[in-house]
Every structure is written in C-alpha cells, then in structure tokens.
Amino acid sequence: MKKNPSEAVSARSRVYRFSVVIEKDRDGYFAFTPELQGCYSQGDTCEQAIENIRDAIVLHIEDRLDSGEKVP
Image (cartoon, rainbow, N blue to C red; front, side):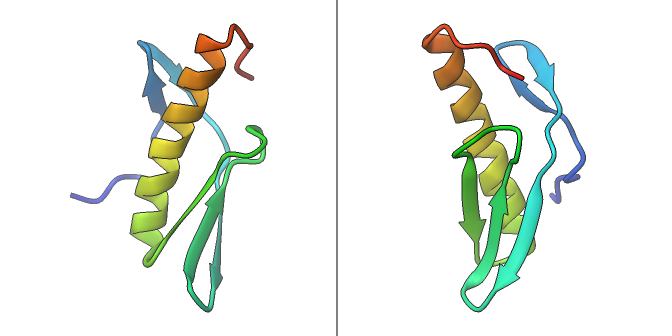
C-alpha cells in the first residue's frame, strides 16, 4: 500500500506536519526534514525513502519529547 507523502505523521497521539525534501542521487533517494535538524533517511526508491523518513521523523519526535525538548 502506497503512503501519501503529504500525510501527517503521528507520534504519541499528536499530529505533526513537516516539509520533506527528497533528492535523487546515483545511489537512490535521500530524504530530509528541514524543520528537524539531523532528521534524514534514504531509500532505493522514492517510496522507500518516504517510508523511511516517516519512521525517522517519529523517532526524532519521540526522542525530543523524552528529552523534554519542544517540537516545532
């Protein structure tokens, strides 16, 4: 099942929306979230990169919340 790249990400019962930039390079696709410094991922396909960045965003948010940091 394909996921919509503009679909919101949910972490700990809150809904967040972030921009995601996907770039194609010779090794596949690179994805990052400008609002979350250091939040990036990659994939062999664009769909895989989208799925991987979603997981990275959730983990990034959970880590920030566990550390008592604010989420933009």
